[in-house]
Length: 140
Ligand SMILES: [Zn+2]
Image (cartoon, rainbow, N blue to C red; front, side, top):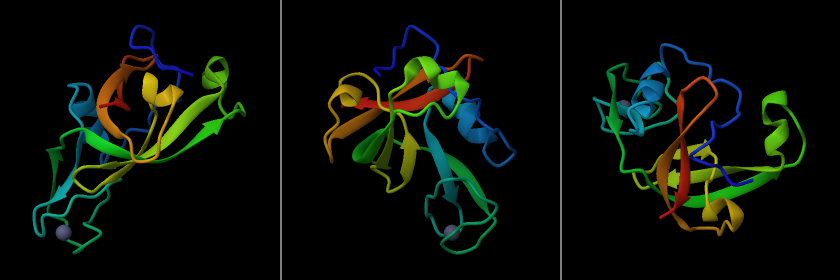
């Protein structure tokens, strides 16, 4: 269940759209970023065509610290995608970024072995089978 930085992560390929492309491009530079509204200053995720706070379309992207807290997690024992068959059981987590944005992600290392509600996490990046870097979180 522990993710390894030395082996590519088997996961379904991300569905990269014009709205989400900056997220994946910055991930490939080992930068975690979220949309940031230029009108009201609110961050949000996932990316959308308008700010969910003020409905402005004046949106940009801005890096975040990568620091987060573990909110919740679930361990998948069912093989929903053939790509993950060898990784079952695997953990999917909800984390709150320090900047107030919630992400669905995976945990790596000791955080995946012994997750604790509220534990401090920091982002790291693992490569998938196509070379795309995916943000995951490990114990801070
Ligand atoms: Zn806004």
